[in-house]
Image 1: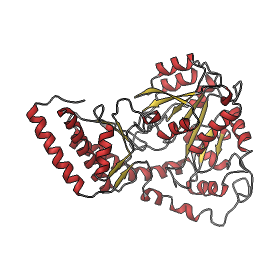
Image 2 (image 1 turned 90 degrees about the vertical axis):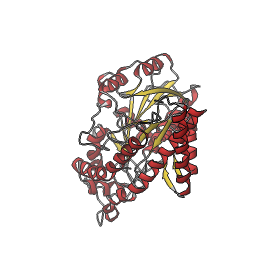
Image 3 (image 1 turned 30 degrees about the vertical axis):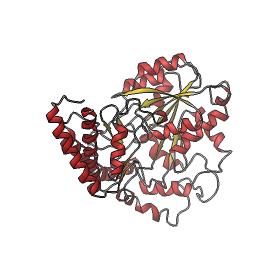
Length: 422
């Protein structure tokens, strides 16, 4: 990635970078690119939710949504999202606001109960480990760390995790109980799992009989181009391969409607679904069906979801285009950086020279531009190369985003040229 420079050229570039950084610091910026939150304008697209369900309090089948019960969630809402998440409505559960809560609960139930196919509780089996494709999602890693689950990094490729590594590891180690996957527009690099990757995940041999794929399909409907990427149906592939219970599917409306008042979904085999429902019945008498009804009325059907996501795309696409345009203009000829050009999702991954990411993030913060901590894309916060920075373009205004990316580019040039100068 780095190009060779003559001493004179490097001296001039470093001095220019220092001047630019001093000017940046003097601007007194206060910009935040840390998390992939929807901007207020995106939330406004679902403003009508606040007036729903109006005077209505019955679901399509006549259920009074104000009362207890309905642990699996409203059938009409599950029908809307069955195609989006590639799960038959009868095998889909609609819950509360957070898919992360569902992932948390599945781990807890596996640790303290007995998964279908398991011989005993995970907590009684000694060491438990998960495979973690990297770069990946820091909240997945935080769940593992919270429960003392060992994390084993595996490299991401353009087609998903390195399947040769995955297949070898799961075949030889019965302590490996799962793998984290964001299959479409992965967080943070935007990769989409190929059909071959899905097939291999479904059919691979695992030493653990209770191995689970945590299929976090967070960006199932979050396209940024006119050519949406389609991924293969893992739930169906697992069933066809004779491993019907292998996958837990997760999704939510968090970046479709209201991030703080959405609906989360869990999909799985009938056996896994009954396992989770039985466990959930001990902790809840039913989800917020009023909110589920307002979502069903607002979105109406799968076409309604697509129309809502087109409106979301109209707000998001210019921001991603701005990131690409500025990085190319400021860093494209420098040899100091490479970055992803995702076709969907919520993030751009910036790669800087090895050993530079933490210092770039530190210099940016000192100049008023706050980024996700370097290392957050890896288990235990440790990026061995110290090279990956996650950019979250969604929340700032377009003008603020442009300032932030221009400032970030200044920091990359400063740190990169300082490293070369020794």
